[in-house]
Image 1: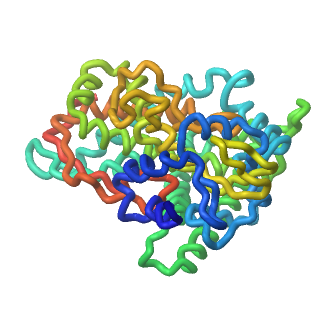
Image 2: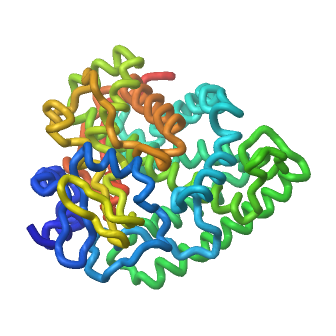
Image 3: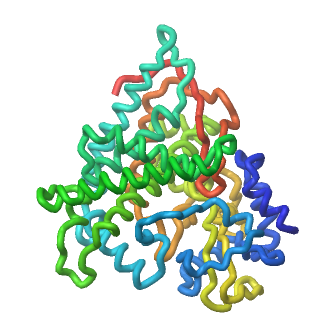
Length: 420
């Protein structure tokens, strides 16, 4: 095995089905070639490293070489402070705890649960909007599920969560689209142009958020921005305005992108497994185990590149030396036959499903409860309301990004839409 293997992993030609490559990688659970990264591809080894404090997520600890093919997908040029997912303790812990106060237990235990009704309303509205694509009397001949549903749903949710005024949501959507596109650049567009457009969008978003934060300090509401902007006397204190802007941008981009992929990968998988789709149509509660199996089977985040070793670490009989770059292939660990029986089978009845789809350890997905609920509601309602849905392209066109893997478009057709 050589670095040619790693380049295949990020080669767009293999985006539709990278799993045979992961199977080959697992033959060498800790793979290293010359001055490239140490690539870990098996479940138990990945799980151990996700909980190992000697693995750093802070890019300032990296010593990247030009030969790291897995290091090229994450650019983080920014004038804002680092977000907590790119920090190590204690800075990570402080910022994550502050961010969690208005989002989840123990301070806000009902935040996500109480959004269920609002989320359901957004889903219903978007599905009703698909009728705009009606071509014949009773046939929806072509729907792009990404553009018309999976993409607008989570960014609308983030706007409501942060407290973005309804009249400003369209502006927020534009910034989200622009910044998301910078994570998945078009090879036919000049990289300098892409970077410039993304930088301009980041500045505009930052200025908008700064104004919104100031307004919330004067007139606080129940939204997350109001609560993050409030002066807090707890030991962790409060965030600075720049830290709040960084955190809000993280919630917008990271939460949005992963949820788009989770919903789209989920519908693609269900359309490929019509028996499971029919079961979901008849039993919406099946959405809970379906989403968990999807997080294992087709995780929205495929790999975590650009981690670094803060000390020598023994993994699977291999010593990863201090200062080395480490990449964790989460999607490969999720298909490890030493951990999951029949790992290449999509099985929502699977009992033992402690997957890596949302990470693990201190950097486990911050928005996991919301992402799960969004996907459960989205998939159960699509299954219930779309009459005879079917794929128009299989495989569909995928995004170029190897880290955040999912279809760029998902063209489907259906015979009609049942009323809400």
